[in-house]
Picture 1 (cartoon, rainbow, N blue to C red):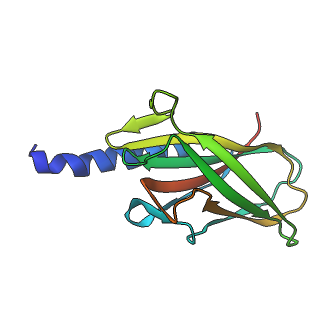
Picture 2 (cartoon, one colour):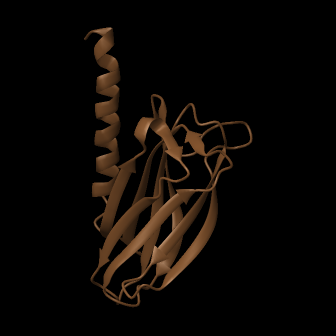
Length: 160
C-alpha cells in the first residue's frame, strides 16, 4: 500500500466504524449526522434534524454525536438547542459538553485526527404526540467561526 492511500483508508475506516456504532443499536428510531463544511462551524450555520416519532407510549433517550479534529482548540463545547414539537411548541436549551479532561486527553474514541463522542442531551423523554420533532443546533462559543468541528449528529433510542 502506498503512503498516499493511507488517508483515504483512514477516512473509510472511520465512516465504517461510525455506521456500525449507529446501526448496532436496535432501539434506535432516528439517527442522522451532518458534516460541517471545511471543519469550520459558522455560528449562523444552524444544524437541523427532523425526527419522525410514531410511538408515544415508550420513553426515549436523545443523544448527540460530536466529532472534532485535533485542531479543535477547546476542551468544551457550548450548544444552543431548540426542540420544536409537531404542534409548534418549542423549548430552547443551552448545554455545555466537555470533550477533553484537564490534561487535554480527549473523551470518546479517536481514529487518526478525528475524535468522536456520544453525549446525552435528554433522558427518558416521552414524546407527547406523533409527528416530526425538529432539533435545531447552533454552537454557542465566542468565535463566529469555530474551527475543528467535523460532524454533529443526533440519535434517538428507546430507553432501556
